[in-house]
Image (tube, rainbow, N blue to C red; front, top):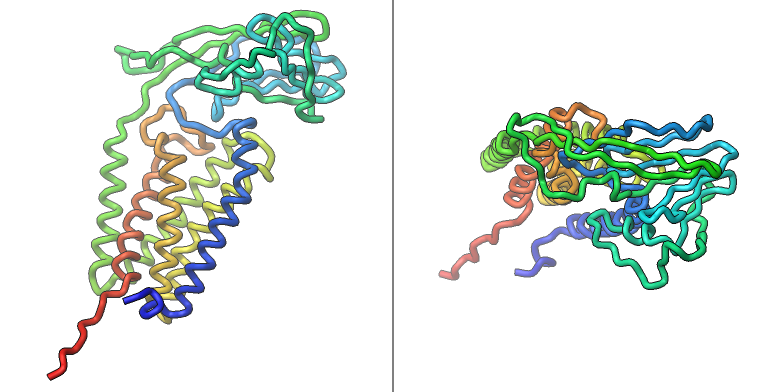
Amino acid sequence: MTIRQWAPRRLRVLATGALLTTLTLLATAAPASAHASDGGAPVADDYAYRIDDFEPGVDGVTLTHLATTGQLELANPSDVEVTVLGYSDEPYLRVGPDGVWRNDRSPATYLDADPSGKGTVPAAADATAPPEWTQVSQGTSVRWHDHRSHWMGGTPTSSAGGPIEIGHWSIPFLVGARRVDATGTTSWAPGPDRLPWLVAMAVLALAVAGVGLTRRWWAALAAGAWLLLAAALLDVVGTWWASPGAALDKAPTASAVVLFALCPVAGLVLVPTDRRAGAVLVGIGAGTLLALVGWSGWGYLDSSQVPSGLSPDLARAAVAVTLGACAGLVAVALRRGIPRPRPVPVPA
């Protein structure tokens, strides 16, 4: 039996539209993802960073450590030029009245491009050579990943089970012609046990899938779809609050999550008139979210530092409910959306 023999036209149109929508979203989100590599994609880990001292002596010049991305942000709306010095005290980044500039001859330009510390420095990079400046933007602030403020050692341990200070760091700047050092502290705190969240996810997924095998399977779709929508929206709100950057940079990812969270609800509307089309729409939304949220939010479950504007436990609960509901809805969609072959009558 071929697909054309059993799939109604509406179902084929629906699947084609969903595929095109997915490809469009991925194409739209690609520039935002590329920009996030410069602007910093929020990550969950067990490290906290604190700036202890930075006195530039110029009004408006601030240095911030972005907890959600592990980056530093230097803002300078003044008329005084501020320069970040690299690992050999060479000019690295420059922020002033004429915008943001980067020295392509600085080894830090290439070392900091890879947060793991494995960036390759080309032969043309020379800390002793005259700077070759490239304008990065016309803005008044710059964000960058700096290995001096980023813990590069192994995973520490704490016999007390609580936060511990594991390192102190210093980064030099030039404010005008005057040198100013920023100092800070890195702390580590163990994350929670992931097992309770996994159990909760499994229970929710089995409950939705179990009811989906009964005659009240539509109730399982309804409960799972609305629960998924609420949890996904909560996760989007928390991530939006915590993510640095302009709204236009964050909108593609947030829009994709909201759209696919709405797919199961839309599938409920189709179920009474076309059960298979409704089930497939539920499966498309839940399956896509299972991959998206699983990839970006899995670390929430056992990390102490969660990149969310919500409380850590509420952010973890939103991710766990989203993943559990998605898994259950995918199971129901597979059961109700794939037709079973009918027995062929045997001629008497």
